[in-house]
Length: 115
Image 1 (cartoon, one colour):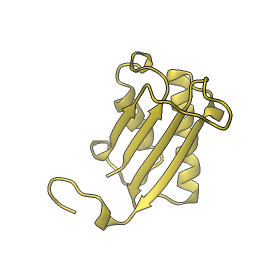
Image 2 (image 1 turned 90 degrees about the vertical axis):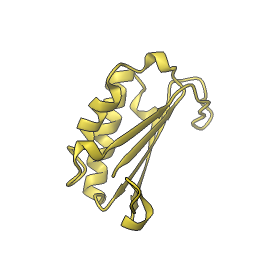
Image 3 (image 1 turned 180 degrees about the vertical axis):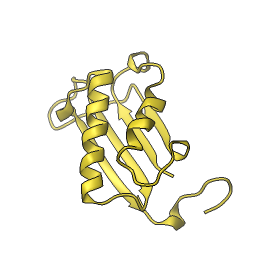
Image 4 (image 1 turned 30 degrees about the vertical axis):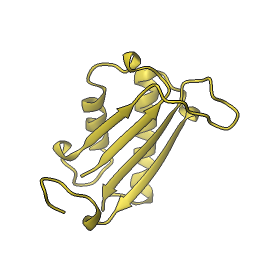
């Protein structure tokens, strides 16, 4: 059950329609054995973000949490595809996108009243 969260300083109006569903389809290309229906995406816009001494350019901090589908090769592919997607769809420069990937154990994520 992958959860991708994007925190960005751009406005909600700058995020295109169907951004989330399209990004979910990008994710299934790099996450092993994860159906698109299991992917959740949350976008939090209008945030104050400072990257080093820069706080006035469009930027994003991205968190991806998943169970058992992340290794070094998968992570490299995922970071590239998500970063490229964000850059192409909302124009944030790739060097202003930071991404944190967390591989969770099966007992730390719940869905439908189950762990």
